[in-house]
Image 1 (cartoon, rainbow, N blue to C red):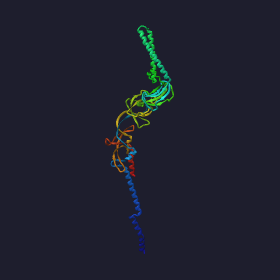
Image 2 (tube, rainbow, N blue to C red; image 1 turned 30 degrees about the horizontal axis):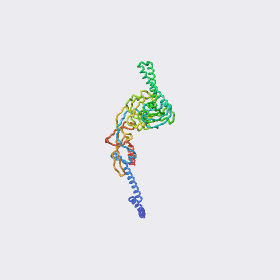
Image 3 (spheres, rainbow, N blue to C red; image 1 turned 60 degrees about the vertical axis):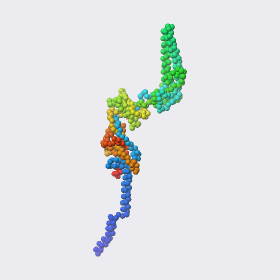
Length: 420
C-alpha cells in the first residue's frame, strides 16, 4: 500500500519535471521574438554609429580627424600658414587721432556779404583752389572802386615823378619839388599795393579789375586737398567778416597723439614703432612711428604726449580726428613665428595646432583630414601668439588658423559617442 502511494506521487511529478527540462533547453516563441527584437536594435545602433563615423571620425592609430567638406565650410574653418611678425617688450597706453594744424582748416570770409551759392555738401572731396561758395558783397564793390581810383592816382604820381626828375636834371625845377613828387608816388604806390592784397584775400585777381571788370561776388576756395567736414551757412545768410563757413580736413596726414606715463618716459624715444587700434575696431591694428616726443609734462594725467605718424598703406578715410585708440609702443623687438590665437587649442592641458593632411572621396562627399601637432607658445600681441612646433611638420603645411576649436570639439563629441 505504501509502495503504491510512492508510485502515485512520482507519476504526478513527472509532467512537471519534463516541462522544466523543456523550458531550459528550447525557448518559447515569445522569448525567441524578444531576443530577435533586441538583436535588431543593436544592429541598428551599430549601423547608425558607423554612418556617423563616416561623416566625422578619429583614427586612433594616426590621430587623423576626418570631416565632411560641408561641415568644414559650415563652421568656417580657414587654412593658412605661419606668419613672421615683430614682438617684444611694449608700453601699453592710449591716445587719440589728430591732424596737424596745416591740414585742418576752418574757412571764413574776409569781407561781409550774403551767401549767393554753395557748391559742395558735407563729405565732398575737393582740390586745392576749388570754389566752395560765392559771397555777394557790397564791400567788394567799394573795394574795387577804391582800387581803380588808387591805381589811377598811382599812375599819375608815377608820371609826375618822372617829369620832376627830368626838370631837376635840366635845372629847371628845385629839389623840393622832386622830393614832393617822390613822396606822393610812394604814398600812392603803398595804397595801391595794399588794395591789391585785399582783393587777393577776397580771391579776386587785381588784373581783372584793372581792365574795368567789376564783379559783385567773390569765391570761398579750398586751401588744400581734403574733405568738407562741416558747412556752417545756408543760402541767403548774411555773414560778417571772420565767421566760420566751412571746415576742411585732410585725413591723409592724420597721426596719433599717445600718452606716455611718468614711469615709462625713459623707455620711449623717437623712431620707435607703435601699433594702435581703434577702441571700436580692436581687431584692426595700424602701424606707426614716433616722430616727436613732447617736452611738456601734462600734470592732469601725469604723462607726456608722443606723436606717431602712420606707416604702411591703410584706408585712412576710416580714421577720423578725435577717435580714441589703444596703443602698444614697442621698446625692444624681435622677429618670431606666430599664428592667430584662434589656431591654438588645449588638448589634455597642452597647446596644439591642426595641420591639413589632405582630402579623399567618400559616397557622402569630400572628406577633409586634419592632424593635431603639439606646440610651445610664447608671447601674445594683437591677437597673435608666438608658436614653436614640438615635432617636425612640412615647410609648406597648411595650418588651421581659424576654427581649430570646432575640430577639437568634434573629437570630444566622437569620444562621448564611443563611450556611450
